[in-house]
Amino acid sequence: MLEIVPLPAFQDNYIWTLRSGKLAAVVDPGEARPVLDYLAKEGLSLASILATHHHPDHVGGIAELVARHKVPVFGPKGEPIPALTHPVGEGDRADIPGLDASFSVLDIPGHTRAHVAYYGLGSLFCGDTLFACGCGRVFEGTAAQMLESLSKLAALPDETKVYCGHEYTLANIRFARAVDPGNALLASREERAQRLRDAGRPTLPSTLGEERATNPFLRCAEPAVVDSANKYLGSRVADPVRVFAAIREWKNKF
Ligand SMILES: [Zn+2]
Image 1 (spheres, rainbow, N blue to C red):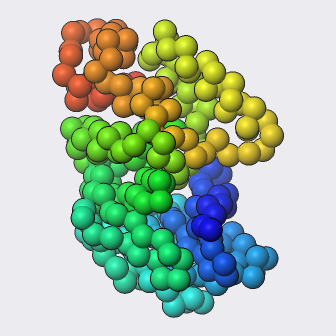
Image 2 (cartoon, helix red, strand yellow; image 1 turned 90 degrees about the horizontal axis):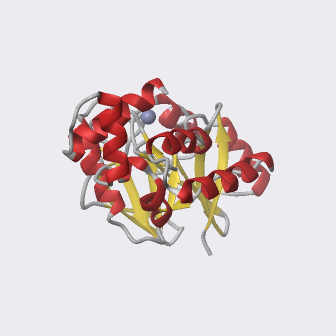
């Protein structure tokens, strides 16, 4: 039975750890120490590393981990990932040796130029593209690319568990309430997230059904979100890419 455990790193990163029997794989180890400590405490061996994109808070621990554990490192082809052994892109699979876990790779550019997600076992590891009730900044791609990537993720089944790279949920919900003020589901989502944080627990994973119902960046065609984007811009736009770009810019200043 595969278990998925969050290892907190830095201020608000999660290193998602997949474990079964005596083996574990980690997603986006921005630092090595939390992983090494966890492996030692639990008596686990590292089986593999998966990286979603090249930012240091996601790959900074890989060199130290592979110096101690010679394991396959999956990551997007076309991005500088340390010690990459398995460059992957759309249509490829990431099979984790010994863990009986296999993921399909989705290209989701926008936050970075070749960002990937890993999808399998009803779970989605999406790095800094889709967040709980939010999305990543558009650093290396275009708004159109980012929206297409988010739409691709949004097309996965409702019950898909969303494991993203950061604990940004409460701040994201506060922004979502400004953009989508009539959405009653946001108030209950905020209460739930606040209770979890007060108890020192992660708000993740969420589900794609929950994201589709509350995440404004997946709701760029909803009249309420379009209206808010227009108020922010002071002009009339309806094209989802322009709506997305407007609320992404607004979020940066929120
Ligand atoms: Zn990033």
